[in-house]
Length: 443
Image (tube, rainbow, N blue to C red; front, side, top):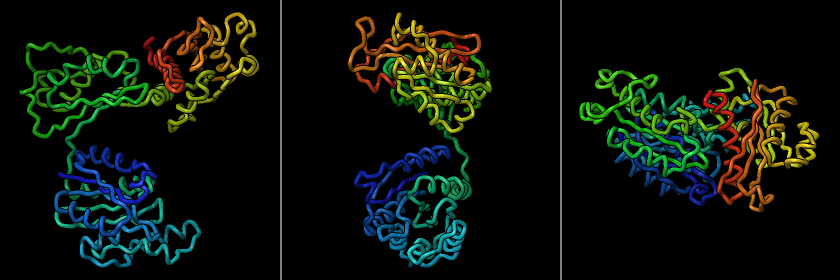
């Protein structure tokens, strides 16, 4: 199955808009077992878009088109599709009624300008849009089935999930054979991760191993197309290779020799064993999302006291949907006076040890926990740079405090980055990792 994506709009071509739609659609098709072979971008030009559609129709089986379905003169996708398919544009009754319902529900009048959005190629089928005004549509041209969706991400995603995916699954009778697993790694450079997994391709030749660094974490991705899988040819089943069969969840070798899913699981277990405690999520969650998952699982809450990270930890936590279930308080106590007044740090502690010290970090965490009533609290105080601190405290030094049921601790960490932004990111990630380890029972 050859699939392509066509992204339209001058704003994409000029760099005014980042095309996140294509990334989402690639990932969504991948989940169906369909790998996109090409992504094309075209500006708001009827001839260029029409010509591109014709070319795609002769080489692909599916094409997802985004953008150009609005009410203004530069929204030309329907016109270009009609031209390519040699069809006229007609006022589609289903699209028009869908728009009337949307406008009426919001108390707006349907204007002649908006009616333009219901003009679709004569033989097209409408795709309902419950999140916006622009209906989508699908049509067949040569060997290719085209699905045209709005460029607004929220509208496109809704249409993809409720209209396009069911249509593709039904028409092509898909049984996904593509297995994907993502692992999140923290605490190792990418080169070291690669070195620890250097034998993977010899052991699991049918599985692709990929790496994506997004400082300060690394994603390890396993991709396995089980179509035509022949396990007897894999080295992992060679009796000369010793495989630890005690890993939790691992199935016996007899089952693995006939079940590609079990083979894929064995590969995942092998990677986890090689990387050990540096794996912070078995499902590809970001550190902050994994911490949130563990807190929700335990029915516990969190507060954060930050100095050098300036609210970054709190920002990361609140980027996770549902974080209001467990996140109670953020205190950015940058000045010593704020540490004393807001968190109740003893002035003697600051006078004796200074702001960047384990005792200060511990009292910050304890103070945040007491003020908020949270089950857990973490704190950061350090030197992000580029200017240095006292002689004994260099740039890249951070003290992280943790307070919780039966726990009141703090540790000092040193990182070698000279860049302020990178230091703040690694400090915030380390604080989340300290908490994650505690919640996961890894300390």
